[in-house]
Amino acid sequence: MSRSDTKLFLDALASLVEEVEAHFLWRGRLRDANDDMVLDAAINGQADAIVTFNHRDYGKVPDEFGIELMLPRDVLKRIAT
Image 1 (cartoon, rainbow, N blue to C red):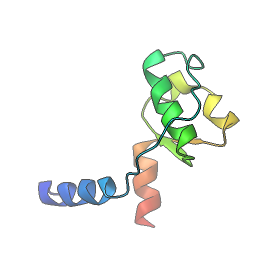
Image 2: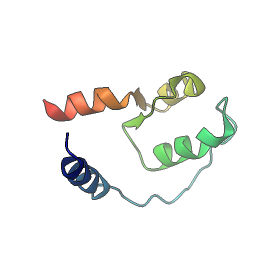
Image 3: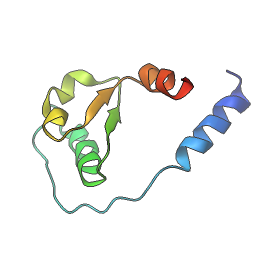
Image 4: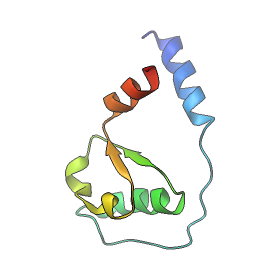
């Protein structure tokens, strides 16, 4: 993928971002406190998935909220089909 293709892809991805207002905080559920804010945003934004290389620190907690953990490569494969 060329640099310009990467920029186009990231620009298109960024255009899908929606601001999320936090109504509930689910802090303290994960091994790494820095990941709690990502989980909060995913829950409050009713996300279908969290895309991360860091599955270890999330464990099974996202499953409790119906949120799938995905590797970036799996997202790219899904987009490509």
